[in-house]
Length: 238
Image 1: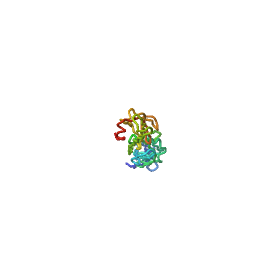
Image 2: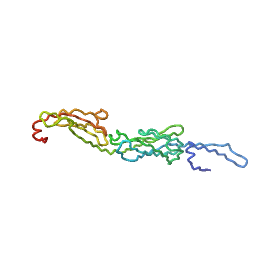
Image 3: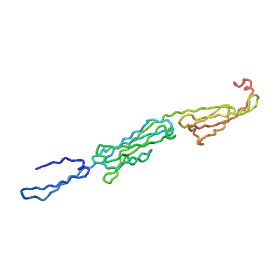
Image 4: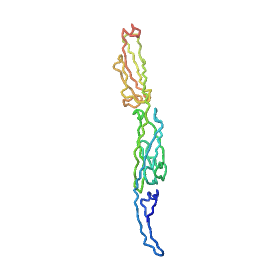
């Protein structure tokens, strides 16, 4: 004779199924006989990650990331669950369990943008989910999200006379030129030049002396010009 038993989630989680049978006839009963069937357990965890907003344009802007961990295997995962992100660090715990196959848990973390992120033009971070099954750790797939910087490069330049007068040939006029970064990204290779003020001295950097015109930073140059007869004859229009 035959009989059947529908496999349950508990049977898969247990790792094996053992059942015992006896045969009885009148007052006679056979010795018990057992049979064990082994479960093919496949623990798996899938990570899906998203970030909002998808763009940033300033230092100190908050990007919120959401991590969804789904049990994509065939065994129940009791947890705990954690996410390790190369920008936001470790989120522990990430939601709660147990998670039956197909079910999910989620958590979130925030990241604050830096000047480097703006200068680079985009921000990409990668995360993975982690848990254990049968005392053995395992990880999910890695998942990445990229948010894009809205870069606005701009600068202003001003020039003024800070000493001397142009009413006599040979007088020396002292000029000051200021270069200011008015955008939201650092400017590499910035410089000021003036064909009449050669050599032009500077720059004197208001911020870090690293040769990069940082956001909000000003560079100051100085130079001298000797008044000629042509300058006086043209009333400064030469």
